[in-house]
Image (cartoon, rainbow, N blue to C red; front, side):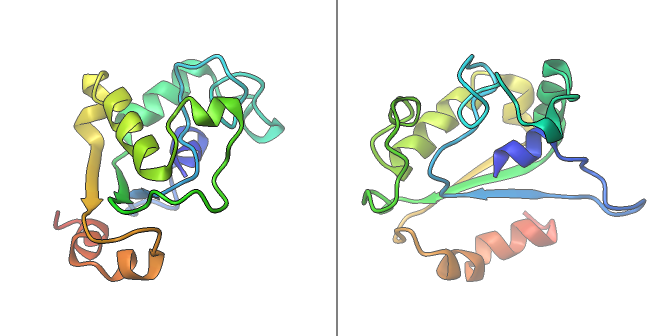
Length: 142
């Protein structure tokens, strides 16, 4: 998820460029929120406590990431329904749109973020991974 974009090492080995894909998560990471780590930047787990707030923002502004969701992904199912999660929206597609609006407010993040809505899909990862848009993104041709 986008939490890995924020705090992951970002390097596998020289010559390998990572691209990230965040697809229909239950919640999105909000680096401007003072909420606990799962929803915001505070009270981070041990593995990323050494990563500064500034480094998190730099990572998010430099790492290319595809954010996507199916337009029909509106069923609740196993959706996180805690108050911080519900602030992001009532379903995955609403949360995706909310996250998109938040990212677009930061021109540097918007520059490396790719947003794609799979119009005829709900929460169907296998169909998403086989979609030509996704395949082209991963190959770096989109």
